[in-house]
Image (cartoon, rainbow, N blue to C red; front, side):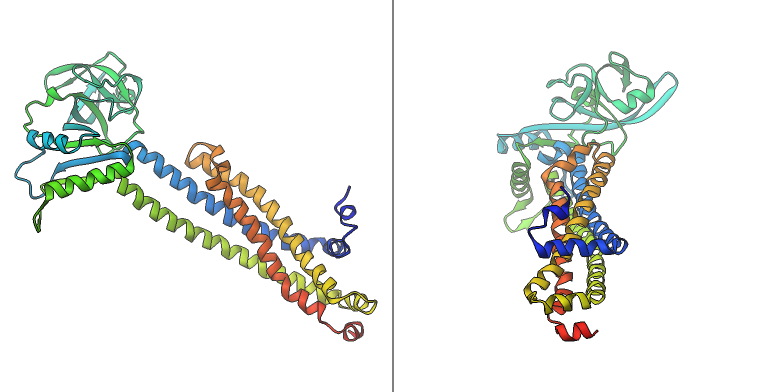
Length: 385
């Protein structure tokens, strides 16, 4: 059954469909403008979602971590043992992991790599491994970044040397997880006893239950160590990645609104094209509309006919645009996130609905003036013209 056969019971819709078919090239060009507008809105909206998911993925589990280091007003060049114990006495519902750090050059088979060295006890709480294990009590052995191991040709069980001591590799760290102290370099993780010559801890990481708990812990420690009556000093620098996530989300939300605004401009331009198509169509069919009015067709029916034409244009362009946007969105999610199915999640799929709804709304809005003009034209003047 054709669309025309399905609409035979609705005269205004039937006539609107036939009128669009009279000049198919002009109808196609008008619908193309709508398609471009919908693709712009939907694709840019989904691009914002993909960027937000990528940022969240890069932060990973760091949003529930609090980092503590010596502040600018501290009398020590690190976090002291007494301060670590004081932190543990204040924070009883989170894991407190002190760390010492250094840097060195690791060599193997004639190749060298500069890595940061981290001394820690509970390696399992801070590091994800691609192979091997990260023990909760790291007393022997070492972990090394997967990328550094590939660069040097190292495998599990191979020895690495630091400060005259040999450590067997027990785990390969996932190079893409977290932000280690190496600032993008490879990382070698050894038992904290391997850095016993350093008196103080370089940093302390606190693993909270979630981002909200991390923010609360950060505020509690900052108030305890850095506020003395009315004076504020930075004895310990306390930072939470949860606040970083909030900042990134705020920026990406603003960026997303800007992208949607740019896409909206495209659809407004398409609406002007539909307005032009509707006006030209009513001018060309002025005599026909005059005949309809003369034989008793009421203004409301003419009004519905023109508005239905605009609705058909918006619906057709919106559907095609949504289909194209779905393909574009899947490609973007594959490139940015690595998972094309992310486009089907409501956070991104809703922009397909927004684009389609905006297309229909803009088309109907563009058809109001031509419909009003055609419906209120005098039958005598229309026939004479």
